[in-house]
Image (cartoon, rainbow, N blue to C red; front, top):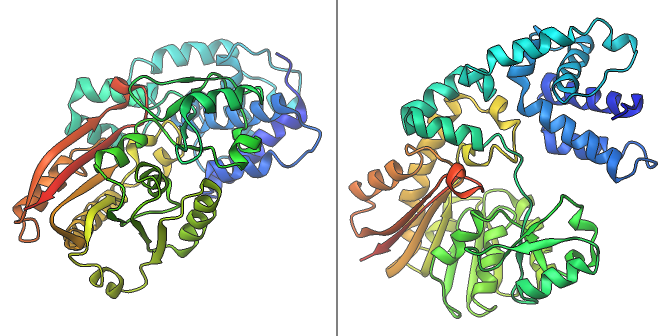
Amino acid sequence: MRLHRNLVFAVVDTLNYIFNEGKYADKEISKALKRDKRWGARDRGFIAETVYDIVRWKRLYAEIAEVKEPFSRANLFRLFAVWATLKGIQLPDWKQLEETPTRRIKGRFDELSKIRKYRESIPDWMDELGVQELGEQKWTKEIAALNHTAPVVLRANTLKTTPKKLIDSLFSETVETHSLKKYPSAIQLDERANVFSTTTFKDGLFEVQDASSQLVAPFLKVEPGMRVVDTCAGAGGKSLHLASLMENKGAIIALDIYGNKLKELKRRAKRAGAHNIETREIDSTKVIKKLYNSADRVLIDAPCSGLGVLSRNPDAKWKLQPEFLDKIRHTQQEILNQYSKILKKGGKMVYATCSILPSENQNQVKNFLASEAGQEFSLEDEKIILSHESGYDGFYMARLIKN
């Protein structure tokens, strides 16, 4: 593989924004890909994959390169040289890559790979927390799985198509996919492709949604005609899935504290032909109080550490801090206590997170059931989805009934 100077410089510039300025990897990559109109799919693929790779393995590569943050431009080229050497790519004769100790890099890699926190490239505190919450064996397998690049999974919008028809539609646009046995509406890309530029996407025939995330809406056991409240709807991936399961009948009230996310949900709902979703911004406690005892179903897709989705957000390893975890657990408790009041007697509620930590999952449900707010509730079912077992995101969901 021959390295091209303009692509390597684009990688280094993007890493500078992510590592030194705390910018989000996905946003910076997306900006970088627009820099040169002459770049083809292969060039853009090189930039995106290389940046994600170096972000994912930052700690390991920095240790091998013997550089520390904040990284100078020379340091960033050293990180790139480590990446290229470990990939077996011959380094060109550029002054930025002079004196790269190729042999030493491989030796250091073998040495550091014996220590989990370097091998999996994670902060010390995260490694300690993982062991504490999941145990040595399970954590070792899980963090290794979360370092694999996530596959691209789509959810067929059954308001407009079927998974089989969707596979055919995409095939006609040269995107090859296959169905997934345990996930009725899911299809997976055989190779990465820009699915957002397809007519199939513009016509609202699918959404990009991980296979684990696609289990949440069906777990709520909705039926057409019900009144459903999605309390932390965000940009609405699960609201849209609920609309298709309800065949556009009944009402879905999508709530969020961020109005801009709800605007995005409206756009997506229009494209998907989902007509039974109403959005409401939570700008005061009144919004929630008005809904008390009114819903047949309540979904709480709670804010969380996001540790179950590290494979698609590798920069979260470096942004996440232990203090944030304490804060988010407190928020989860408050949300459960408040939003559970929206449910009618006899109704069902699902509490879900994209975390793998019992302290954000099973323990939160246990604490809620033992609290005053949870006295009328009982646990009907729960699913613990670990990435090393499923091959997809780590997720948790619990279904509670209000007696």
